[in-house]
Image: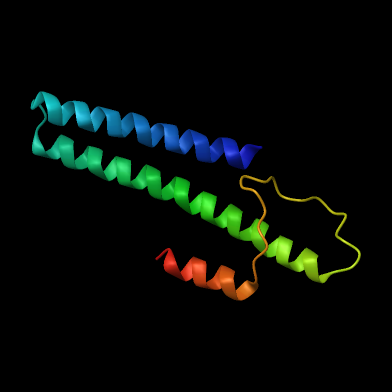
Length: 101
């Protein structure tokens, strides 16, 4: 559950930064440096959350593909699920990953 909590915390941080940015813009009392700094902070927080989520989901999907090819199924520690498993091929995973860039 640590990964899911990390992703949620990063998204909440991004939401707080976005709320602060919107307030600055609505009030019209922020200077250029503050606005640009806040935009950068929002962007960075969302990127960090999405990279962690993508890496986690990709590894889960890769494990699911590997498990579907093995008999019997693995009995070792499995990573925490943050999304519902889906049947995908390695080629589909690769295509999805490349579309994220």
